[in-house]
Amino acid sequence: MNKMNAEDDDKAEKEVDSNTLKALLASLKAQEEADKEIHAKREKELAAIKVSKEDVALLANEMLLTPAVAERKLREANGDLHVCLHAMLQLP
Image 1 (spheres, helix red, strand yellow):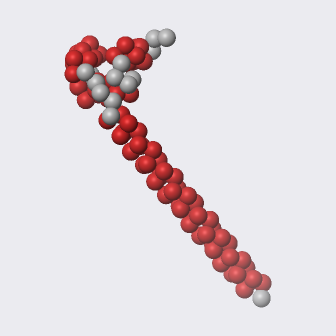
Image 2 (tube, rainbow, N blue to C red; image 1 turned 180 degrees about the vertical axis):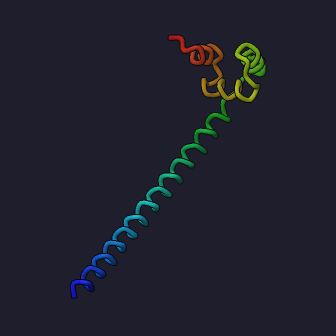
């Protein structure tokens, strides 16, 4: 009789663990989807920022960056070369 109760307890414990695991996985999936939406929105905002080709070339040459990285850094600084350089050099 005790053996049956122990088996029932094990089954119930596994069911709880299974349900908890399913809930955690659903929560992780929802968070991942929310993160993807935030990332896509940010990328769209950055793409809308206009940057000067001259600024990209200057930043790439002076900071030894690829043009793609230089353009990204400028977009993150709202296209402002001065702000971008200060951020990259960590100046106040």
